[in-house]
Image (cartoon, rainbow, N blue to C red):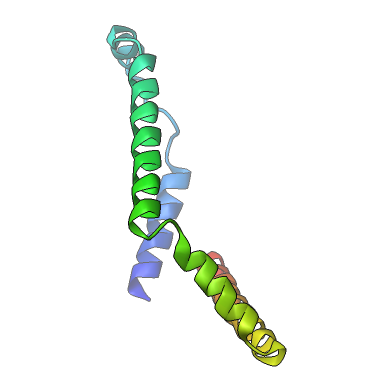
Length: 113
């Protein structure tokens, strides 16, 4: 509770503080001296990330037996009685709803505090 009060105090102080302290153009001069952003690095980084992701996906597919586990799981689900499939779907949806409700309630408490 003490931490929440301290965060409220800090939030209040930051909101009421002056938005800008005049620095006689220092910030503008520093920003002008910075080198321009490098776009090629971002493109290279994205290409490397995409390539590694594709490589890892292909490797996982090959190691797992060509995705055979997916077809085996679907076959097992198809062999289950319809009542079990319904209960499995109901249980899954209840778990997802409970997690969502818990997240919403905790978010509301944080906003209210």
